[in-house]
Amino acid sequence: MTTQNENNTLPPKTCSVERLITMEDDVKKVLAGEKTATRRNGRYADPGEIMTLEGREFVVENVYSQSLGELTDEDVRREGFDSVEAYKQSILAYHPGMPWLPQMRVWVHEFRPVQE
Image (cartoon, rainbow, N blue to C red):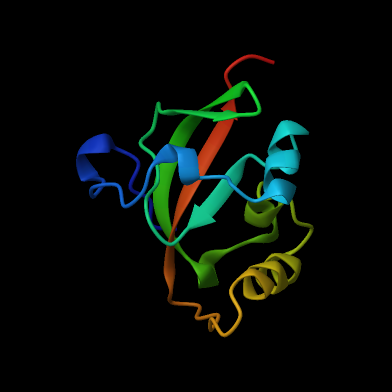
């Protein structure tokens, strides 16, 4: 896995942390503790940034690049899915017509509650 987790090696953000988790089902998974990571086409947060969902704060702990072909079942469990195939089908349903290319790179954002 190729990781870039030092602030000085990360490229500029392409969006804001407020847009990191926006879908209602994903918000529910985060609040229930079932989702501790999300993958995006761009970089939405820096390590240490705070994401607020329904009044609860989550700190972004790690941000790195990963190819879709590198995804493991463990990776997608942190996304709230049981298998890579279930995750893939969900993403393709959100983005009709998008090809699933193993070499395509995404940005992984890992986070945890600020207080439990």
